[in-house]
Length: 476
Ligand code: ZN
Ligand code: MN
Image 1 (cartoon, rainbow, N blue to C red):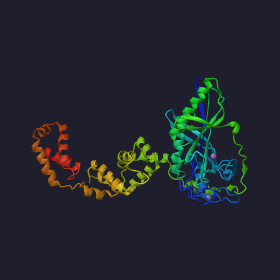
Image 2 (image 1 turned 90 degrees about the vertical axis):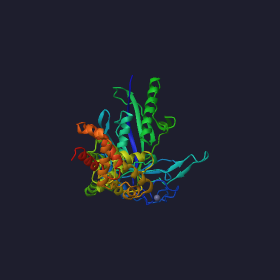
Image 3 (image 1 turned 90 degrees about the horizontal axis):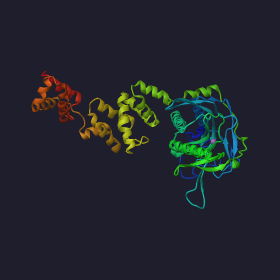
């Protein structure tokens, strides 16, 4: 019998606000442990939370880009649990009136386009972080992350393969990045994913008992965890066992899902309305203002790049990293030759990035200098084969491309007298080949052109050399 998996997701994404959700502590990643805390986000009793307006704007943007309806009336609940990462023993979250309800996001998998339904997106605060690996005898708590604003995106159980889940998480990550809502850095935990997963015999109406894999923080481990859990559940059922409803974590090193807690120990969160935070009423004009602030999303960019004549697969690579896409856009403002800029980014800049010689987060030059380099090559001020040498030097020294070309003698001087002398010399030294050409064998032209190009590097651009060589060969 074949078993068919069904999955739903909860994605937690940290918002890019400067401060935390209910106080003015910094929400930046990292920092000396417990250096970004105040009595408010450390759970001291009697502190009054004050809602971060930017966080509200960000969740509304997230809702708009995922096609959700935005609640005009929204409110907060306390979700209680005792765990050392939560000093106040309750998390401020939303239960009854989340900011965003419903929604749809299309994904593209080899089998075609598929629409994934969003159930809701709500706003809540993050918990602190426990550090277990410093001593076997005690754990340490760092509350810097405590109360950083999170959105939790809950989907319907619309996924039936690891591939679909991976495509969806990647798409959401990219959409949030482009909207300026979340940096999408999964390796830093700013986007984490929980997967609910069950299997049932193919064709069966009823879903099987589900388990939940918590806190997956890379697309790769999402794929591996799902495959491992489908296999575990299938083996269990095939050997006559039963899947138990429980929470799992994925051990990336051994590639297995491991039980964290079973349903008997499931939390009763004792949700109650938070009496300190009044419900919020959103007006149409506020929503419209926020909607108009949403920047160009990846699909729009794709259309624009294709209109420049860039191939879909090349555009896809550029768009897959917002920083690279932004750098491309900025560069074509300085040198309006999108195809040339795209080609140089794809072939040279990305190669340097992949080799670890360049970091798109901190290039030692700006888009202006980068564009200048491409312009020098494409207007034959330097030979195109020198462009990559100049780029390497720009990465090393941060000097501007014109200075480097001067210093290295890459600037083509366009000395026509030398061009003519060299071509005359080549013609007299290769009389046989020249005879072949003149008697109609056009293909030997490349041989002569190669020789001329070689000797005239830095003296003239290839199109100029070509014109002069043709003239002389045709006896003009
Ligand atoms: Zn604080
Ligand atoms: Mn949550």
